[in-house]
Length: 502
Image (cartoon, rainbow, N blue to C red; front, side, top):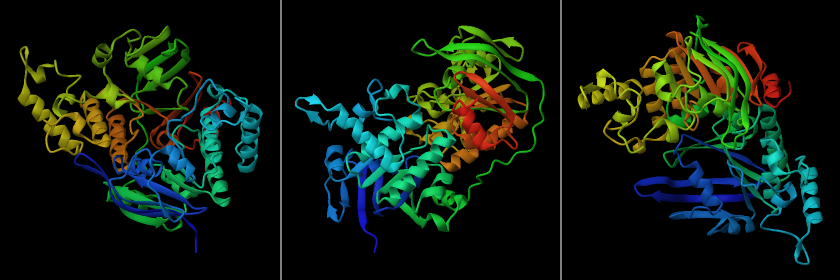
């Protein structure tokens, strides 16, 4: 019989009226890889935070190596052999790999840090598990895939028996993802139990032994990965059949809509993030910008949307120069903008859903009587888009903050689609939403293309780019390094370009 590392029985965690975890029961054996799947708000992160001591359960039990454990905090979890690699790395950028690995558990020589021991520890773990990394490298100089290796080495240095990975491939290139999946298999083969949260079904099927699916805080399914497929997992996640492949006809490409020429844009640190970017997007086509996050995509999108001023170059929308335009002016020129951060740039959380659906149109004649807002028209507009976009809410009068992540995204997409834009600028349009909402949003983006809109899709998800785009532009270090038709595009080659192999 397999040796049980983790046993969870009837775990409950309540926040106000929300039962984030509602009687969850699961187990993990030594040397086993278990995936946690579920929609946004299904309770996955709450569950693993309880295992790692970041959240205290209200009821139920967590047993580690056969003993019931009341895990008080992460230090207690680590002492029990539990390690966690967070989605957002917990590393000190200006310190070396070795210094980060031993931080909080420093080997001493007298009263001073024994750096040679720290370096040797990194080398030993690296060689044992195939996690190649230079102990003396500075963290901020390393690519994100290598930084993640450092996080794993740090966890393994604590003699971890159960390793939790939260969205481990979110910011990795395809090659880095494949390397990580290979490392996970190697760790499991050596006896480490692994629990990982992901929304990428391909990765689950590639490495998981078993899969638990959570929905609304409950475990709704447990299945062996070898006995299911992506469609089966998606159906378990959302409770209905989901079409995973984007169904679209060949594009009917029209006239040029967006032209970006020799664009240069600075980031918040006054460093050049966009560096000589050139691209055109035509009516009736979707152009996908593929790249590892941090290569100028955010600054590019903000410059086109009028949220950030370029220092050089030009942006034209439908022949109109919008290089120095503000968001109001870019909207007037025909730009619909789905921002990557819906909470910060897409919604006013305290405003009603109805008001959020007219944020960029509140001053139009359709929604006012002279100088006064036409509340009836605003509410009728909301009723229409709530129905059309299947926004799950009892009323448009409720604040946007009452919605789930997927429904908030639908509000943003509905609003930007409502103007029938000449150019739809979609930045990470399905980030943090479940597979059901992804299917819906993808369909709407294709519909915008088919109505004749030009679509510029900026996404860190290569699968999304490959599925939606008609043409792909790979970005690295702030410029387009290669353009190609999406049809027949080689995933591995794109990954190499994304990593700078041009």
